Image (cartoon, rainbow, N blue to C red; front, side, top):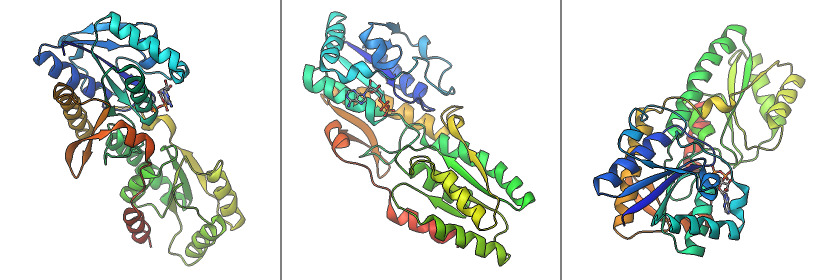
Amino acid sequence: ITSVAVLTSGGDSPGMNAAIRGVVRTALSYGITVFGIHRGFTGLLQNDMELLSSASVSNIVQRGGTFLKSARCPEFHDPACRKQAAKILHTRNIEALLVIGGDGSLTGAHLLEEETGIPVIGLPGTIDNDIFGTEDTIGFDTAMNTALDAIDRIRDTADSHERHFLVEVMGRNSGFLATHVGIAAGAEMILVPEYSVNIAEIALQLATSRKAGTGSSGIIVVAEGNEPDLTSKIAHELQQHGLAPHISILGHIQRGGRPSGHDRVLASCLGAVAIEYLLAGYSDIMVGVSNGEVVDIPLDDLIRYRKGLDPELLKIALQLHK
Ligand code: ADP
């Protein structure tokens, strides 16, 4: 292999830049040419890319977001567009594609390889940590710490004013971020989409402990992927029980910011290993982490299977706030 391309796609996550740097510097050390494609699959379809040098990735390891830019590209769902993408890569003599993104982006990468034979390697870039086969994703640790920073502040106000706060964290359909954030923030309650809840029961529980003087304030972490408007429904139910909760939706602040040391190391290593795996002949895989070791996961598997929330972890989370 003498020439590869790298792109970032889907929702950005802190550490994507470090991953690009890992890919570029490792590839260059093997004498491989690297193209950086702008704005994910959108840029690929527009043949919008630049040749990357070692200097192109200087001074980015500490920056959030992705300097290559990211985008959603609905056209990539169309096999004809994926064929066009392969043609563009062939024309430029690019022999493999590295895709940094979430499960949607990695699905697109898998289909590209399956239909056109272009070797692809995926890297898990998402704050949600919802990708099957890997226990960690680039950006998860940073997002957790960003949410914690916000919740620690909110707790001061909750405590001073003796109020409950419903804090909504990101995570789409998965409760990983909410569970980890909830444990680390010492939340009084954690609501995740994987387990349904009885809102009335929760409200009663909180109201009872408030009356008993054991819970005049509290933090309830709600994963965004829960049923629509769950957060406001809970707020309404709490009001019925005489509580006056505030709602705080953390939103996009969780996606940006300086990547944590953990995410920088993870991203750098996965970027480097992605190139090593490619040179070893692997394709149609994602590089991920299992039991603390870097592993390869067939892209087919991560599309087919859904990563489950560790029930033990949730059990611990729920025990700790009692
Ligand atoms: P993420 O990668 O963060 O999960 P999305 O789900 O929005 O984000 O996917 C990002 C992009 O990946 C989409 O805009 C599209 O270009 C591509 N993609 C997602 N799902 C598919 C699919 N099933 N087939 C082909 N391409 C897809």
